[in-house]
Amino acid sequence: MRFREDFDIAGARGFVAGLSREGFTIDLACQLAKDPLRVGTITLDISLPPGIPAPRKEAVKRAALQCTVRNTLRETTAADVEIA
Image (cartoon, rainbow, N blue to C red; front, side, top):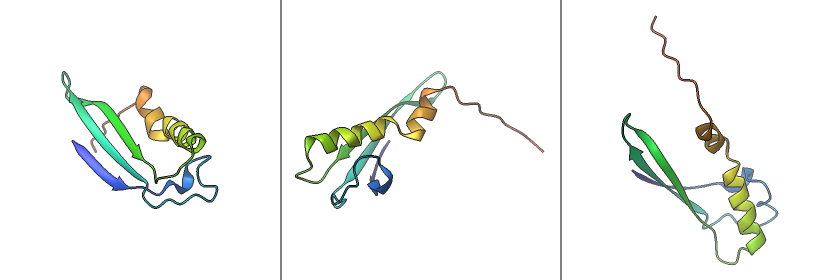
């Protein structure tokens, strides 16, 4: 599976500070695993506009590594099924 979506980075820590968001994209690639069938690997490929200074690139990486969804996937998540 592969998804591509333009992304509004307005909420990412340490990045906004007056920098343009035009040209910012994220490619999301998922690899499936078996036994049981599930998403085994998720890879984000973040593209930044030209001219972004290295410290800002590191800030974007830190923000991505602290993402709520990433944190959720790293921990055991309860999954309940209820039938009424």
